Length: 197
Image (cartoon, rainbow, N blue to C red; front, side, top):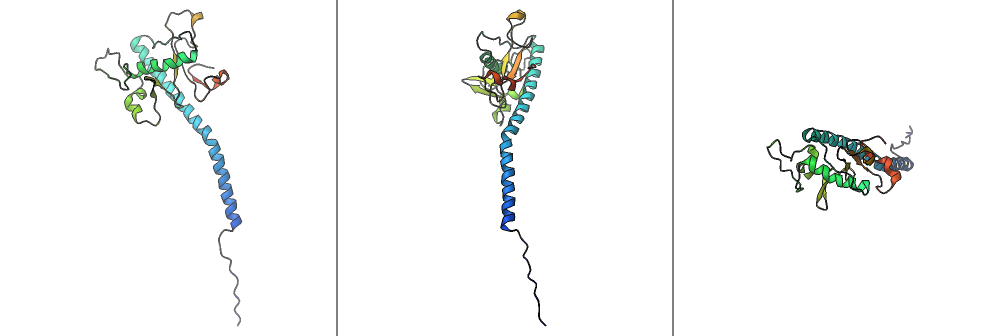
């Protein structure tokens, strides 16, 4: 008897099959990497919108306690520059850190001016945070957004004639330039604001 051995084919992947799978994985990885900046920008924009809502809530509490919003009228110059100065005004009034040493020296006295209206602005919250909400720029603490830019704030004194007002809202303007170029007027559509564009 003659034994006939059938040739057995070893199971496994051929070189072409492996190269096809690796090629598909490289294409998918490239698509994912290309989409990441857009995804991160969308996440940051959502965080900024949420933070602006927290600031508005803190400003409302401040106004209830003091009868007026923190004042930062436009100084006759550039609206954006005045808004950046407002980031410092927001920090002092909403964090309670009036001496700008990074910590609020909260007193037990209810009539004390030093009161925290937005908890995310306190030193304890910002100390080890991956996404701080207040940073010192040139010795002045400012409220910042998820993109690392100062949050802009303008509030004019009450009773100012309407035709002289430079704010868009009757109370205050609060906005973030987000990922827009601050010097490009056409880029203002990317700003996150507390008013309708």
